[in-house]
Figure (cartoon, one colour):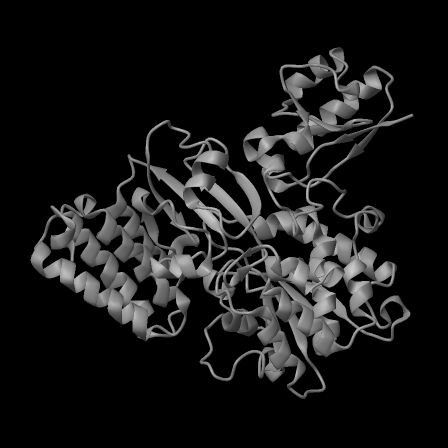
Length: 517
């Protein structure tokens, strides 16, 4: 009888040697004439333990990590295939505190199943949401999504049900579903983990969206820097077609939905929905004026739902267990769970899925373990390169869209990057302007020109040149970017710049916050 051994195929694990570990385990098993069933699963998201090898036992899955090829022989010597003791033994995977304290809904299967095995997906509650949706009206499906309180997980936090309802009620012979998989924010990787670790949940979510609003064609707009996601998605889509979960007559329901992956060339601006659609249409990725909204006139001028990966991947749970079930997680207007990604200078970086309401401090210390360097955490940037830098005095802020807005910050895609007290916040502010300068599509003047001038002004401030003139000039320039930019790239660049200036004036050579103002 074969023993099942799990070695992740997630690209983060691959970077740390997972393929070599898998090959070493296979070779050692053959050498010892032991029969094993090697499964390449997704990552559990405990990245400091990757490659994390798991063994299926009667007691549950037992974890060992981080495993390197040179550890494999000693693992076999200690009979790790039956849960034997070893210096890398971590115990039952599900009992690891980092995992046990989470509330995994969207990531319920990630790290557990073979990502491209449809039978594995079905055996773990897969496609139950779609089967429910196929016997419902579009309006009823949309009502469940609306009742759930799901808001866009890509950063804008716009209510998903309102967007779907608009497309549902806009008459057209052709409608589209677009998944924005152009995950480009620093410190974010939850989209990638879903696509590599559970691609069927995204396919199911997009199919439900199509059935709900009457769209028959879907596109996953994927950044070209994600080759492993591309492979997993294409394999899963092919299997979904083969087993009638996609195509002209889904599960003999009479409903049609086709799906394909399109690769973007890596422009950050194409993460903005209208620029993304321009790219999908074969044009240069430039931001469109609004209105019209994409829900009314989107891809090729037709009504279009544009949601990000996590938004769409959350839908199967909602249609399986109901909108009220999902709404019971979270707080205030922030309902459900959020896959939070912690990175940067932390001991235990990784993916954490929890209901809204935990504090930044709990994430940084209870999960992240504090800084990897052992120095005090000076600042965290939340929400990607356009997110505000938060000082230690704001670490007790709740993970909640409105709580962040109240301190002039954004939760965004749920990425959190930590910095210890060696960071130069003036340099980080300068980088924010430089990032905007490089990634601007160039369509609007505030973003195109303002970011270049902003970088120059910050450099002058860092040199101590004419602070009485340059600090107010920087603030005035940020105000122009904030109110005059066509999209969020220019409109949000002031968030990291001004937060750094406001909270860390000494790094700019300014004596106190009063002078920084």
